[in-house]
Structure formats: C-alpha cells, structure tokens
Image 1: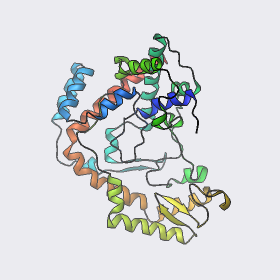
Image 2: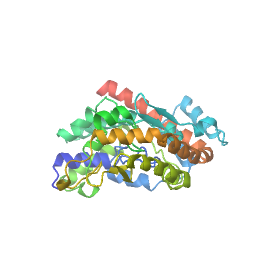
Image 3: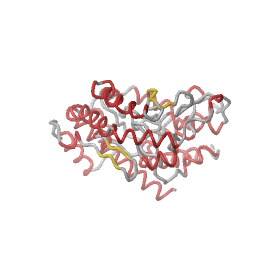
Image 4: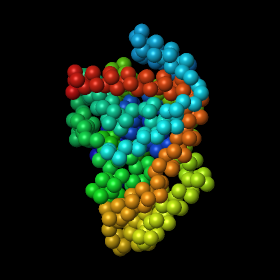
Length: 334
C-alpha cells in the first residue's frame, strides 16, 4: 500500500493520540501530539502524585486546584454508581462504570478538532502550510453521532442492525489512520521538526493533559467473557443463532458456514447483511446477553474503581478541562 503525503500526515496525527487508553476496547484515536512527545508520555506511567503535579502546573487556577484536592479525598469504598450500567436503546450507547471517567466519542472529536486547528496554525506560523484533504477533514469533523451504536458486545441495537447490518463506524481520527512505520517517509526533516515543535507548544498541549493511571487497567471485558457465567451467556446466544442457521465465530463475528459477518472469501459471495444482523441482535435480546455481560464487566470494574478513585477523579477533572479549553478554542479559531 502506497501512502500519500496527506495520509502520512494524518497517520502521524492519529497514531499519537492516547486519550482513552484505559478502555479495554480502546483504539489509538485519542491524542494529537508529535511522536517524540507521545513516546515520552508513554514512558511516564507514574503515580497520581506526578499527575496532580502536572495538572497543577498545566491548569493552574484556584477552582481547579480545589477540585484536585477534593479528588484526592474521594472515598475508596465501592459506591452504587461503581456497578451501574446504562444501556440506552434510544441511541445505542452503553455506559459502563469506568466510562464515566472518560470523554465520549463525540467529545473526543471536539478535542481532536481543537488540537488540529492549533497544529495547523502553529505550522503555518513557521512557514509550513498544511492543506491536504486528510488533515483538513480533521478540522471539520462530523458532528453527527455514531449511528451504529456501541459495538463492544457486537451488533445488539436493533435500529442499527436493521439499517447498517454489520457495517462499522470510524471517528474522524480513524478515517485517515495508517501504520506507524510509515510516519516519516514523505516529510522533510524540517517539516517533521515543525510538527514536533508545534506538538510541544502550550497551545497544543493545553488539550492533552497526562491522563494516565499509575498501572495498566485490566481487560475487564475479557475477564467477564472468560468466566463461567460469561461463557454460558455466549453459549445461550450461539444456541439461538443456531436455530436460524448461524453460529458465532469469536470476537462477536457470525457465520452461516459460507458467508461471514466480516471478511468473506470472494467466491463465497457477499458478507452477511442486515437480515443476519437483525437475527443476531434479536438473539442477544432473547437471552439478555448484553445485560448479563455488561453487569459482569461492571462487577469487575467496581473494586478497581474503588481502589483508584482519586486518580480516576483527577483524570476526569483534567479531561473536562481539556474539553472546556477545546470548545473555547474552536469558538475563537474554528
């Protein structure tokens, strides 16, 4: 695959984003900074003490400092909301307990938009005008909500199944993502240095606080699926699919033995479409698959949240502040 200069620039933007690393299903679609800065950030997985120090410097202000102090005193015991799951059938969203500490997909797009604006302006000030189609798309991200719903548990939201089948949805950052290894092939050293310099400027960095925990977050969804109860839920779903000539193939994939819900050999015909997706979603509903599994995930997240509540609360404060700054920047520069 040969990439254009436009695609490589967009790849650099996408692959340096790290906002949602704590989600077990996270995609690297999160933080817009230069590559060397991103590498340094990944090396700084430290404690909440360091994180609070970064925030105090980067977001200095009495009100925010008070919020950080209150966060440090957050109760460590499990709270009711730590096990609360919200499954919204009006928009196809699922909110697990840990999700409440992070930005939504739409909010991430807002922060990406502001950061892209700042990067473009900074580069232009240094004589590097970026005007390619891919990066320009990051300046005008879609304001439409994700139409297919949350897919962490496969196709389950009936309006999405009926309309889109197994089609996927990409955020603005994902639309132009390519492999890390191709970052530097089509830029001059001077151009990359400009991007690195801009990524380090306070104007860009204001949108991207160091919002990471001091330890990796377990894959709670995998733990739930690997449990006896999780496996039983999947078997119930598969048994329902079997009555319609379908079977699950792992990773929420479905097959009829010839065609698959995803990649399908050309000789086997088109991939499974909306008709099969509707059966899939109905079977999940019939056996309460999403309800059962999300509660299993929540039950496993709760002790982790209780143990890391102060850090998580500080992260949420930081992300809220970055979102506020992004919206203000877009209003002024967008």
